[in-house]
Image (cartoon, rainbow, N blue to C red; front, side, top):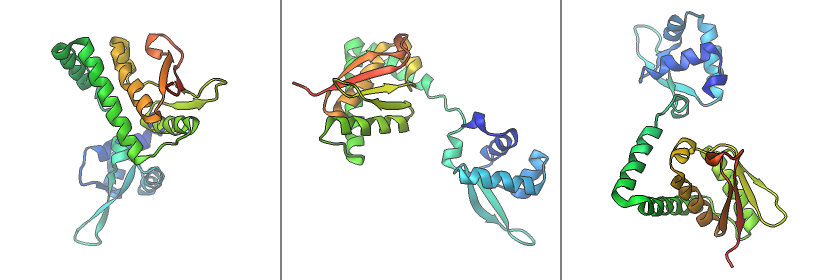
Length: 210
């Protein structure tokens, strides 16, 4: 989302990123080199998107000044380099437990995440309903997932793999996704297409266990 914001709005967010207690309209205007009215307009737009919020009032010699803060959602717009840490963990597990141990650990983790998701967002006894719900949850997690109608069985197609870089380097990563989807839906999952292996999407077909 940061890429679609205007230059001034990006500058405003970056200014707030470096000041924990927040900044006033006057301070932002000075830092950005724009008028206070322009700052207020940007703050209103960013506030509507949940990226900034009013903070504390700063005491001064005259009228207390309102400070504005970057919200948790606003902070998440800035890159978080988690992938290097994930690569370290994956490499550590592989060295300690071998490929089979890594596969089993990823399956266990996927199952545990599915259990937590089902507790928060109960699925459906109907397979199609469970798959629809799962696709919505995956979309929220960043997979850009959509449930598709298939003559034989429900299908989820994901146009974004949140583990793409890791999966290209180590296909075992997909064991997490498969365990999550299988545990949540209570169905067998066939991984029909994978972006990490050159596919256009990641495609998963669901069928009830016989």
